[in-house]
Length: 334
Ligand code: AHG
Ligand code: MN
Ligand code: MN
Image (cartoon, rainbow, N blue to C red; front, side, top):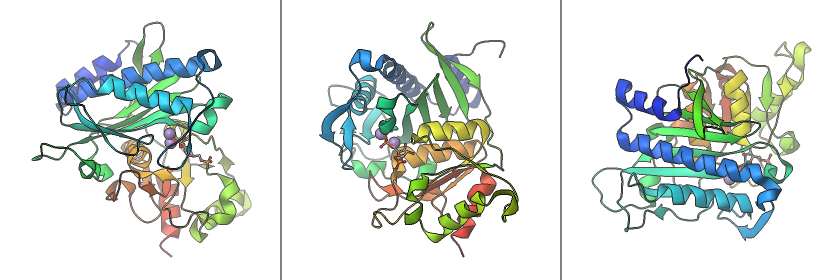
């Protein structure tokens, strides 16, 4: 790219040309990006910053919290609560919604996040990230509560993630395609490094935690089994496998070179719809993938059409290259 375009400039131009980013949403996205820079700093320091290891507490999902889960959550809240653009926030690491304290002005947006995705990778120096989703507070109600958040993913007004890997990369959609920004640490700003991201419709790469194979449902078993049979099997081609165990890093690879990601419902905990959370993992990632020409379903329905029943609802996830997602979804219909 001959001319460097900062995230700020990208957002200002979106606001001007497309007219679909109101100034408050632009401010919100800039603040989220600033918080991600702060998290990136903490991640980079690692053991030197004393940020590795567990915090000794559990979150609402019953998962052990890592120090960085809590640090990232605090960074996001502190950055976003005072700007006047938000009414409330919700996070994987908080049982209930966080209403903007009344010492600050209340805005019209709702922000949801997975502050630190891929927690099991923190201590082993593998890519992790932050996932976020932005909704508008329903009109006609001055107070804000959890039910205001329970909107289908197609209602999102912005979504993205920041991956802390060999580079820190912020990936964003406001409904006008997917853009990628790389953090320039000397300048302290995110610079546009890719736009109009397209996921190839076909792929020869899948991502799934194979250790759960014996717990999967038949359609998922069939799909993966056919991939594994390679060239001489029904698919007539060999497949490669990748599993990073950080959804952000797996989705980033898919947005970059294609592929399909599955974290399906399985029989380990049959009463749960899946492992991943609908509102701050599956919804933002599904919208990004769709905006890049891919598809995202729970095996039966488009993820973005699901109406959440509760904040921390879980969902089965199949997303990425369109033809593969359509195939595995079709296997669920028979
Ligand atoms: P989180 O760290 O926010 O709890 O999310 C981890 C998720 C997701 O990022 C990843 O794809 C998956 O859990 C990994 O699960 P397994 O350890 O079961 O493979
Ligand atoms: Mn996560
Ligand atoms: Mn997390």
